[in-house]
Length: 109
Image (cartoon, rainbow, N blue to C red; front, side):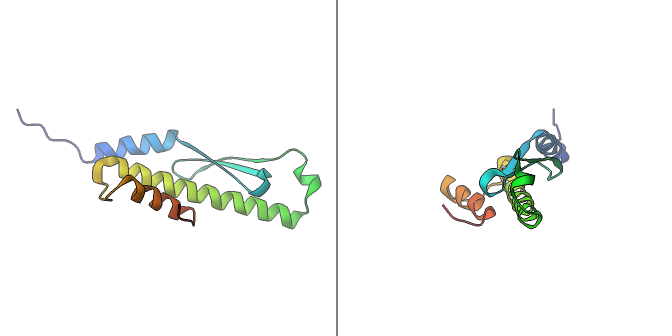
C-alpha cells in the first residue's frame, strides 16, 4: 500500500510549536522584559518595579526598544532552529548551527 504524505503537515506542526513557544527578552539592567510567541506576536511587556520613577522617559524608551529588538532576534533564532529541526539542515556541524544562532544576536561565539 502506497501512502502519500502531505507536505503541509510538517509546516503545520512547526506552526503549532511556534504558537506554543514563549520567547522572553530583557533590556539592559532588566528594566523591561518582553514576551513573544514563536511567531513574533507580542504577549506581554513588563517594567521592573520602580523603573518609571527611576528613569526619564527617553531612557525608558531606549530600554523598551532594546527589549523589543532582543525579542525580535530571539524569535528569528527560534524560527531558524525550527526550520533546522525539519531535517533540511545542511550545515556541516552543531558548531555551525550555534554560529548561525549567534549571528541572529549580532555576535559570534
